[in-house]
Structures are given as structure tokens and as C-alpha cells.
Image 1 (cartoon, rainbow, N blue to C red):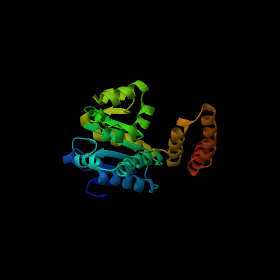
Image 2 (image 1 turned 120 degrees about the vertical axis):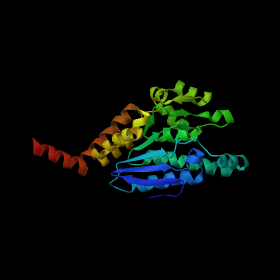
Image 3 (image 1 turned 45 degrees about the horizontal axis):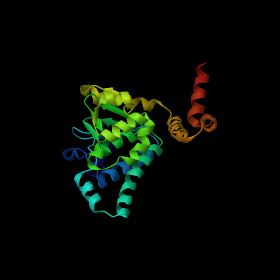
Amino acid sequence: MSTGQTVLYSIEGAVVRITLNRPEKRNALNDAVVAGIKEGLKKAASDENVRAVVISGAGKDFCSGADLSALQKITGASVAENSEDARTLLELFSLIRELPIPVVAAVTGRALAGGCGLATACDLVLASASARFGYPEVKIGFVPAMVMAILQRNVSEKRAFELITRGAEISAEQAREFGLVNQVFPDEMFADDVTRYVSEFEKMSRSAISLTKTLLYQMDGMSFPEALASGADVNVIARLTDDCQQSIAKFLQKS
């Protein structure tokens, strides 16, 4: 099923696949692509049977960042128009964080600028061995501003500074060492390895994953006592969910 020609939506078992479908443009971001991703994420969240979302790119590259038309629009836009345009990405990054299920970036080829930002915004990043990552925005006087809020939570401050001020591309293995990537899989096995990896979420409790994801990100701005208190509250909530009650009942029956 398609959310439009530029973004494809499909379901494989309990996993939703959202595919950026502009291979001739290296899956560059424009208004239609961003809107399509948002639509797909919301649709996935509304389906209780879905356990994970995988975002990938058609063709050789994951996403090369903003396309030419988007950049041209920036040069002639007013402050209000630029603010509204920036907010669309803010909404996308926030939506990924707020989704009750894991959002996984499956990166092949290049993930650059806004494309690297999109991958970084996902909960998990899986990369093919030949994939490349980078934030080259500074080379054209731009700033990967919003993604910094996520980047500095993923890597050390000095790594973040290096990545966003030097604008260099790094390999998948370097990205893994830095903390940008969770797993690197061989190119020839990438599709199968991604499927195997995300299928594990089908065995997990959706409610437990949702509570875990929400708490993990909420704890970021909390003091240690606040984080412990929030953890205690979520612990109580988890105990009362159907998933937990049913699992305990099954375990006790086997004992």
C-alpha cells in the first residue's frame, strides 16, 4: 500500500515498512516525503498488531538530505515561512519519539544531512557495512540544529561537535563506534538480517515496549531521584497491564 508515490507503506507480519521512494533523487527529502513518513508512522501507531516500524530508502541510498527544490525554497522564504518549514521536521522527530513502538532506520548507501538526521532520530539504526553517514550542512552555511538535540544524547559532546562542524562522512563501523548505529550487517545479508532483527519485537509485549520507550526518553531531563520515582510509577503500571498479568498467570501454571 502507498502513502503517495514518494513514500511506500507495507506490512510484513507485525512490522510496518516505510520506504522513501525517490531513488532517482537519492531519496532526498521534500514536503511530500516528510508528510508521507508522518502519515505512515501515525497509521502504524494506530494498528495494535504492529510491533515495529522500519524506515528505509529505495535504491542505493537511504536519504541524501533536502532536495534542490527544498533548498531553493529556503533562499526566497520569509522568516515565518522558514519557521513553518523547520517545524515540519520538528514534528517528524517528535512523532518518532512519541510513537509507542520502536522505529528502526535500515540504512544502505548514504545517509547525509537531513537523511542522517532522520536516521539519528529513529530509536534504532541498522546499517549495511558499506553505508556512509554525515552532517555536511556547515559546508553550505546551514546548521543541523534540531537533530543536535538527539545527536548529543547519542554520542559524546566532543564526538557531536566533531561530526557537525567538520561535515565529514564516516563509515558504518565508525558510526557504530561513535554510538550512532546499533548494528552493522554485511551488505549481502542486510535485508535478511534486518528482517531477523526486527522480527524479535513480535515476541515482545507491545505495552511493555511502549512503557519502556516513553520512560527512557522522559528520564533524560530528570534528576536521579525523579527518574527513580518515575520508574516506580511505571513499574506499578506495567504490573497492571493485561500482558503482564497474562504472562505471570502462564508462568505460574507451568510452575
